[in-house]
Each structure stands twice: as C-alpha cells, then as structure tokens.
Image 1 (cartoon, rainbow, N blue to C red):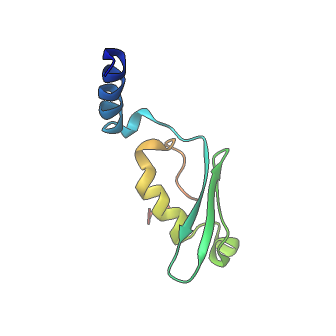
Image 2 (image 1 turned 135 degrees about the horizontal axis):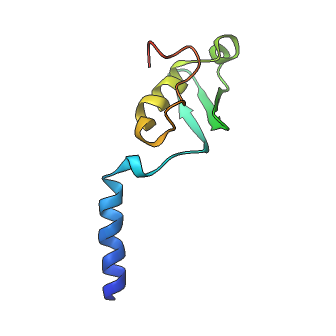
Length: 87
C-alpha cells in the first residue's frame, strides 16, 4: 500500500476517536421511533422534528436523543429548546 495512504488511514483512525474536532452546522436524519419514522434536522442553530409533539413543544425525545448522541460535535448553544434540564 502506498505510504501516503497508510498515513491518511492512521490519521482517520485518530480523528474518529476525537469527535470534538467536528462541529455540525446542519444535518437531516431519519429517526426510527417506536411508532413511526421522523425526519429530524438541525439547521442554522435550530432543531426541527416531524413528530406531532415537536409541533407543540419545540422539543421532543428525538431531538433530545440526537443532542445526547452528538453533543461533542454540536455547537455549545445547540441544546434543543426547552430541553436544558432534561438533555
């Protein structure tokens, strides 16, 4: 294998162990919930989820779960609205 590719593979392994190096600006995922699939997005500092609960509360279990999973890679102010105590 080419030596420069080996170096890139090693660097990728190291980066993968340091998630704090990555900061999401935006993303969209499909979240498989208990009752249905929901589209969850984070764009320009705002969370959104297609579930009914989010429509009323601006926060839901799907946004809070993603926040917990991705905290090292999200800006410090990315806490879902209304979730500061629970997230």
